[in-house]
Image (cartoon, rainbow, N blue to C red):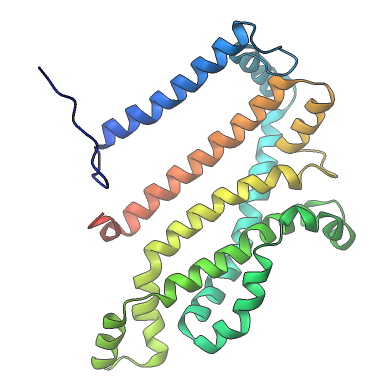
Length: 265
């Protein structure tokens, strides 16, 4: 009798099995969705079936210029995230390295990261109008403060034995950040960037709800008025697929740039 291997805590699995298990979840999910819709358990008004969703998605792409909407959404997410990362990286590193800098900025950063980005929409419209600046600013606000604090904590948790060894070898304070703190924290900082980029995708629909003439969020808002759940679901799935692709790209880049980070996991 062949016994199936038991799961053990923190025991890694092979990449092939990981792909199979991940794909199996989506197969089960789509199967339950199809059973609920084709079986008449849910009204098409409230939830379109998978085939109708795919047909509507094809119509959006081929006849309604949805590709342009996708491009605008990607540009807004990437633009707001890059601006946040460019400012958050040096500030977070300085906060993690120098305790007076951390004491000065940390209360405000900790306070600000609990504020919902969507609450700033009325103010952003007053300050920046309803153009691209307002949407980039919303992504920035939703990403910046969390990223700063995560980087600061990571840099501040650098192993003390590495710091002491660097001082013993004659490294000066100015060089310690460049030679020890940043290289040591780089793999975790890269993971933080990957996670916060995922959060940025969750803000884009809110950013495109008001005053947008393009974007996936704009399409979803128009579809809501028509009760077109097939188009709404397609837009949500597109966002998820793009986010998943960016996440996998980040993971691949991190594995190539910092191969030692996976040791011991």
